[in-house]
Length: 221
Image 1 (cartoon, rainbow, N blue to C red):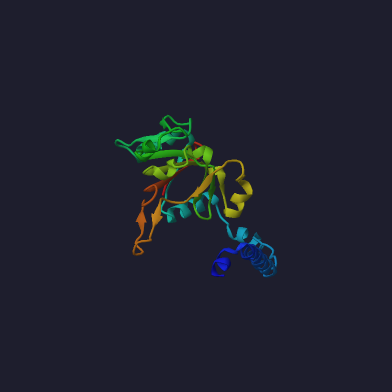
Image 2 (image 1 turned 60 degrees about the vertical axis):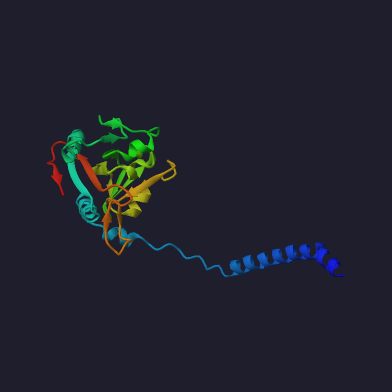
């Protein structure tokens, strides 16, 4: 009789599966019933109205707070500004054909990227609210490159600066490319004993070069 009970489990297994299915459906139904009512998105007009003043000046202040350096340069002086900022023996590369530094593309080996001192990329959009620059996949080359280089330089047109993140998302087409990031300041962490460390898991510095017409004077903060 004991052997009979031990091996006669066909019905028990079926009942277990059926009971498990009922339990799962009961749980899912309970979750559906507990769903919170939909809440309309808050109005953002007040947020935008609060972002007043010259967006370029506000961007420069916000970027400095995020520990980035910002320099306004003439459009044709990007290479000179980069070499002056990183003078001796620096290994400099770029993801754009606009400048004559060593070219980096999707085929570049990760070990080569890790040995890079400076990477120069074209930024697409700047945000005055927080000093962030949107860097799309087409501008960064290999996805790992902006994170493996020691120093990152983003070149941004002054006219591409918007007031806040709401305006940034209004302008961005995030579905156009497979990847993109907002970059604000160098890599920072304070996980260990609440001590701020710069460059722990990314670039040690971020420089934003704001390009402008030659009639304006170069400014650095």
